[in-house]
Amino acid sequence: MSHTFRALLRKVGSGPHTGEQLTREEAAMATRLMLLQEATPAQIGAFMIAHRMRRPTGEELAGMLDAYEELGPQLQPIQSSHPVTVLGIPYDGRTRTAPLAPLTALVLATAGCPVILHGGDRMPTKEGAPLIEFWQGLGVDWTGLSLAQVQTVLEKTGLGFIYLPTHFPLAHGLVPYREQIGKRPPLATMELMWCPYAGRAHVVPGFVHPPTEFMFQEALALRGVTFYTTVKGLEGSCDLPRERTAIIGLSNTSASSLPLPPSLDRLHLHARDFGFETKNVPLTSVPDLVEAMNAVLDGHPSELMQSIVWNSGFYLWRCGACSSIEAGIRRAETLLIQGQVKQTLQTLQQATTPLPTL
Image (cartoon, rainbow, N blue to C red; front, top):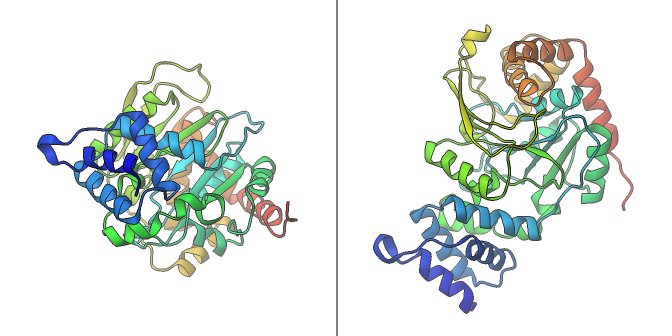
């Protein structure tokens, strides 16, 4: 038993009247002890559910991110005219709406805006379809690549994926606890902000509940992150919805400006104002959606095409590749119809399969 961890557990698990918040350093220590399995299974499970019930603070989330930076993988800086965009999407996947991130990432990379994604396999508690399955359906398998190989792919194609079982087994080792406690632990909130990249990045965490966004702001400010975008997106992802208002927070640092003290500007986007119907694309099955994705890459009009153009247009503007959202929408549509995004996918397929063992 870890006596250090027991003291931290007592602080978060003592109830609303006597419980205490952890400092940033204590939260980092607790996360470190869990990742290294120096805390016992009973301690880890108790901490996760107690912390879930009490809710984490921004300071605690910053400490958890500190531990992930210390013990987790990091891709090294690459040469790019735009910061690398890191899309934070819930690891437990999707069950209702089509994920837009894989094709959006391909559009952005085609336009010279690198993207890193991260996640694992089907995960509790939602057990939804994870991004890795859609990439595999598109002929890109990140699961067998070493971190050095992912680095090479990122440098060559502008796309990277951190796959937990291979690249961060310490974090993957905590997945069974999610199933056993039956709730998302605060780790799931922290993961949305995690940036496994050592260079200048544009961090994009998705969220569902407004208090989560406030925690993002505090945690990112404490860690000195000045370029970020928060999105109340589809199923907690950073995919822009069409059926409702897209609620977005923009830090006041843009892709082309110097770092400034972080503050947040609010943006409310309505798909209908940009010529799109207010209809999200449902997720029926992974094979069906992969087929629809390939049709989009072939330039065929569809509801999925509209969602990808809508989502990509916003991010092309936010990443600094276009002067307006409208210009971003036009460029995304052109890149798809002309087949340039499909060419990026083909380059990615060649870069990832096969690669020599390093």
